[in-house]
Amino acid sequence: MRTTIHWIALPAVAVGVACPAWAVTYLSIEQAQQAIFPQARLQKIGVQLTPDQRKAIEKSSGVKVRAIKFDVWKVEGGGWFLVDEVVGKHEFITFALGLNPDGSVKQIEVMDYRENYGGEVRRPEWRAQFAGKKPGSKLKLDEDIKSISGATLSCRHLTEGVKRLLATYDIALKDK
Amino acid sequence: MTSHSKTNRVRRCRPLLGTFVELSATGLEATSLARAVGAAFGRIEKVQRLMSVHDPESELSRVNAEAFFRPVRVSAETFEVLQRGLELACDSAGAFDFTVAPLLARWGLLPASLRRHGPGDWGDIQLLARRRVRFTKPLAIDLGGIAKGFAVDAAIETLRDADVSSALVNAGGDLRVFGSPAAAINLRHPIHRDLLPRTMRLGDAALATSSPCFTECRWQRLPVSHLVNPLQQRAVTGGISVTVRASECWLADALTKVVLNDPALAECLLTKHGAEAFVFTA
Image 1: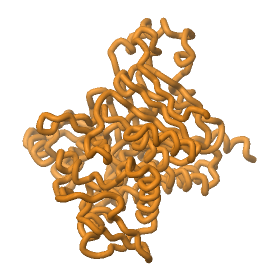
Image 2 (image 1 turned 90 degrees about the vertical axis):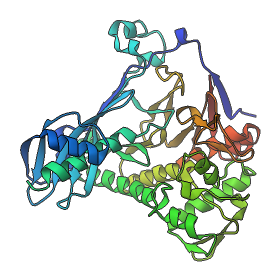
Image 3 (image 1 turned 120 degrees about the horizontal axis):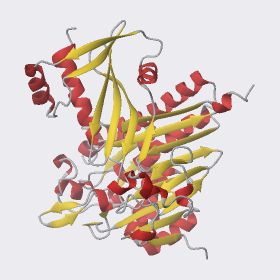
Image 4 (image 1 turned 180 degrees about the horizontal axis):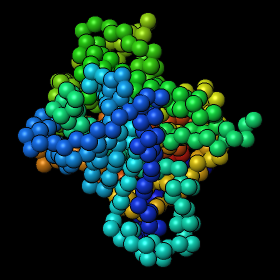
């Protein structure tokens, strides 16, 4: 009978194939705007938070404010388009948040996702030593490997980023 | 006519089901493709709205609150997931069981409102006519072990019905591929995530992974995780990760739990469903 369970013990680290940093760009700012507000006209507005606003946003969202100066987009006919970044232990995510005219969430789109495990894989010369040596290492991640399976990635950090933007809207944008 | 449409490709990612859901599709004119992808995300959002155990407004939360006192009528989707889950619970003699929510609540991994006293398992759930659910014991259900896969399947079906030529839906590692060419999937080691233990080609199939590695924590100094062995009423812990390949994602998702909890029995079930498992150990 064919075995249906394959037991795979961890190979010694030295013979393992390094997984280069995983990075995907999904949408540019313009593409994200089109994805959330198709055909709409958006007007860019520069925002600078006052120290009081910053404190109020942090208090209301429970999340630290990273940038006090940034751009937002007002949608003609109502609504807002905001972009923010969140940093986790291993990941760095840029995302867009579309708000309805009443300030409720219309849509969230991840624009850019980057993650990295193990500092050494960042060094090109370290990565290069594996090129062509193992079947897996020949794969160019962006073009060939379509996806990674292996563990659920939590979107907790992004959820916190959304909370921060909702508070930012409430405190700094609502009356603009 | 179709030569240029083949090059159209949409790849999107949204935070849903507590993870990142990535959806990519090819093979339609750009506007139709964007619409199909939007509709597929919509199906996933609906599953989340109905079956989230964390959302007190979800249909599942209503079932958990009321089904012991009176039969609760549910949506076709929730009823379908309950039916399939109960069938698998029966086939696996309880190695897959979605009534472990009270234990997870006791460990602080699910809301305290799901704590229950006294025994009870999948055998105490009754599915009645007109899509009604009743508990014969005070139970609480967590569909986390099956609904994510179900949502992935629903999204793939939506894309297939929209006539895309290929699609991939990946909900934080629970994924399904449709169409050609076959997609290259990298199975990641749960502990040594910078290693590529295995790369596989997948066409018209699903992969799901369960591992306690990322949620393991301590409760009263005991190691616990979001994975429960219902036969022992204990958490699955340690450096292990199970990935199952099956025809549909809900099945792959649910079978990972059977492999974790009862590997010997899992062999039979995997064979029955034409599935296979990859078990990574430390």
